[in-house]
Amino acid sequence: MKSFLLHRDEDFDIERELPPNAAALSQDLELDTLLNAMSGGDEFLFGVARTVLFSSLAAPEDILYRQDVLSDCIRQPEIVTQVYSIAAEAIRAEKQVYRGIFSSPGYVLHRAIEVLQLYVGVLRQLRGIADEHAAEFASAGFTRFFDMLRGELDDTYFAVIEEHLRQLRFRDGVLVSARLGRGNIGADYVLRKPNPIRQSLVSRLSGRGRPGYVLTIADRDESGLRTLSDLGDRGVNLVANALGQSTDHILSFLTMVRRELGFYVGCLHLHDQLTQKGEPVCFPVPLAAGKQALSADGLYDTCLTLRVEQRVVGNDLNADGKTLVLITGANQGGKSTFLRSIGLAQLMMQCGMFVSAESYSANICAGVFTHYKREEDATMTSGKLDEELGRMSGIVAAISPNGLLLCNESFAATNEREGSEIARHITRALVDSGVKVFFVTHFFDLADGFYREDLENALFLRAERQDDGRRTFRLAEGGPLPTSHAQDVYQRIFGESQPGWGG
Image (tube, rainbow, N blue to C red; front, side):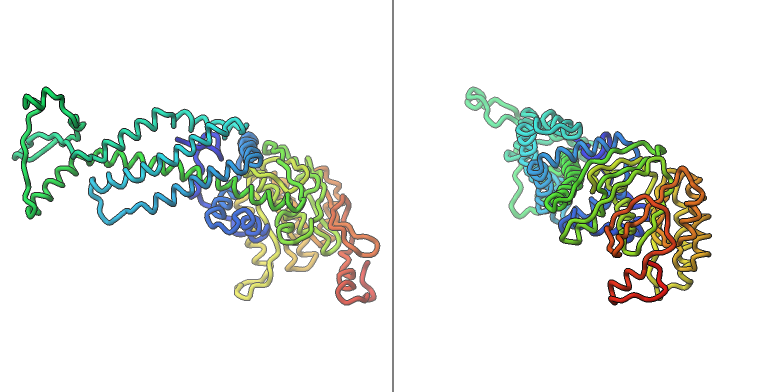
């Protein structure tokens, strides 16, 4: 049995390694805030959501397949949560069935019977949900899932299992056949179907029936009892192994159901928090890699809105056909927040989630990378610029064409002339290699140099500042200005202006 709720034709691998840049992405995009909202404090859900988030899908049809399943989950959250809870409880209950310290075939068989009896009840519950609610789901994933439950878990299946369980309890003893091997040692032990419990009246009255011999072992004959037990174990060994494999197969299925639905349960948690706050969400339109498309309406930072009480400001963007987006403008004007919203939206889209926007469409990227400025680290053995260059070198080695790089105040550790020159050469080389770059910078020389080139593939955004210095936290198309309006920040903090500061 296969669930196939995350992938069309393969199981979800929760053990897969995270990408090398996972730690940097988590720090720069504040992914723990997102994952904590999805998990609700559940460590298992946190791990599942993190693995899926970092396992980007590479084809639009795979993203749409998962989106359709998530759409069903949003429409039927109670049923999805019920199926997840049934699988989770079954796994928990299986662990509570006494394992003991013995591994004899008889013990293995006994435990497998107890576990299989538990699973029969669980599978009946899943079959009942499929019978009652399958018609309420429209996605290909859930349709196949429920069809599988109804097809493989039919009445005949349960009847056969119940009959096997009844026989395997061996309430009338174990019937084993064998032959004498070399040295008169028993060989070829085979478990046989038990004799009929009731003989016919004629057989009993006439004494006819299958001939047999009775050997009685004394109560204190421990060696004889062990020998008899060993004979029984040899007979049930193959059956014990087969039944153990059957229970393992069912456990594997339930484990996969729990893992795959765990991701969707996490999505439901996040969806509830965003929609209850009145924030818009949408299913993005994924486009094939290489199309260089990215447009959005009302795009906002998911992690920011999860941390604050009020709704946050969204931004519109049309960067279709653009491979370089340079973002400048007033300090504390929302540039870093916007950059984070881009990275979060791309990751969420490529793992099949909804996106925090009114609408969003983008091409699939071959990995999302971030290069953010870091605070001074007293343990560093080299300067901040060396550290920034080292991180950028690692990104350049790992990123590939159609990758997405988000730079936030990169190379701010040095002066504007040197930082601009370094950033210009690196950015140009990456863009020429097919990498899409979003760059937030306060270096006027860097931004103005690109702006004056009038590049068709470049888009310039500027954080808005009203005449009185207030920030709208919106970004609009516009070239760079030779000031970051630092005086506004000083005035807001200290309440007075400083002569000679640009405004």
